[in-house]
Length: 317
Image (tube, rainbow, N blue to C red; front, side, top):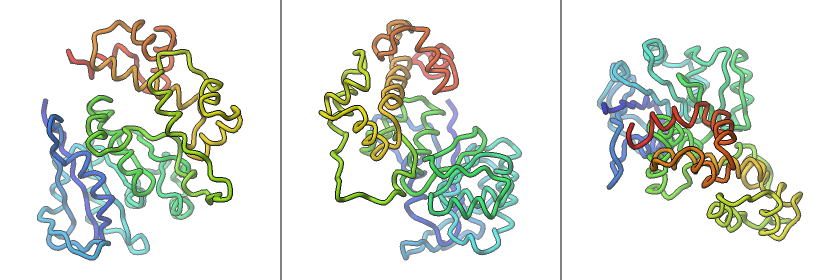
């Protein structure tokens, strides 16, 4: 299998964390995790690139590095009040025209919009910048309440940690759920977060601290093969279904039923990758009751069929 080339385009002053989101997923070598990506960094003017953390990075490669990239990552653009670097804009357009996937993390979406890559399309950015993005680029359909959006050739994420969510999602799309889960385990984080980003923008309510859902989620994850429903989760949490729904909305930005469905589809993906079980047996183990229901849910969430997914990411494939 040929390596997938990922190149990050850094612009001064560079956010170190947003660059690290891409570097951790695509560039870090880990024991027992196959390396499928080659990761590099470039900048319009090679040399010392200032960072927001107060130190400089030595970047040796110029924009021509983007000409060989399969994926180009823009890990933020801090100087949005200034004209975009024209050479960087041309390089992004050139990479996109030849078929590279262009990814904007957090404020990186502004550079993608400046290049015209988001016109007439959906995009997201940090919730604090969403109104600015919509006002400056009215041709872009800005969705402020989402962690990331992947349109295939272009992808954008919300702020900071959502960059990791997007990069793990891209690894999952490229190499399968099991490989993305391996990376996430090494990073000590969940391979998939639920909900949107406005749950983080909402003002806290310290006078009514909600109990963490973690014990209930752990309990349910171990029992996905059982016919669990919202009432079962509420009983385990010792609250009413309405209170449970409110806690899911506050803490995860989703509903209990949707969370259960996504976990079951993730389980089915892993079984399709790692086992030779027939689809009917996988549906049972994932708690999706039947092969027909698995196929329907799989197409809705993964946008393909279980058979096609297994051909792409199963052990034989």
